[in-house]
Image (cartoon, rainbow, N blue to C red; front, side, top):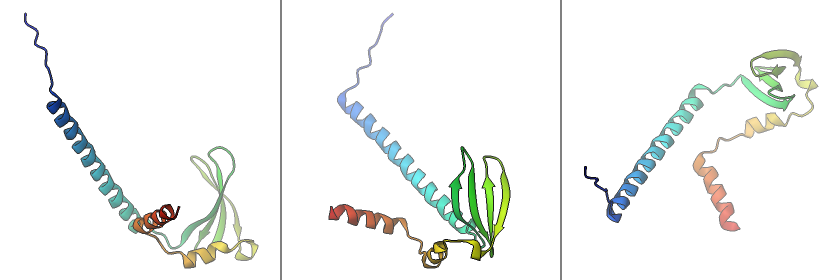
Length: 126
């Protein structure tokens, strides 16, 4: 019985490394494209003009109390891991901080390139 030892040359090892890196880059590009597609899909199909979460406050583990604007009404709901409970309805006069209204009218959606450009500008100034 003869045993053959496989000896790999440094060129073969280098080519194998390059192949693995190319596969890794390919997977990253596919992942990036899928994430962009899903974000665009969600942005188009999940946009709601009548339902907004105005504020949320944690109320224990896996529980939150949320102020939700539904149309012209403001609802206070308790959100748990698997349930949602209605707590109260508030009028606009009962709310003390209306800064969310000013934010929503002046809100401009920023693209990733704009955010990245701002980040790059901050880094270059330092």
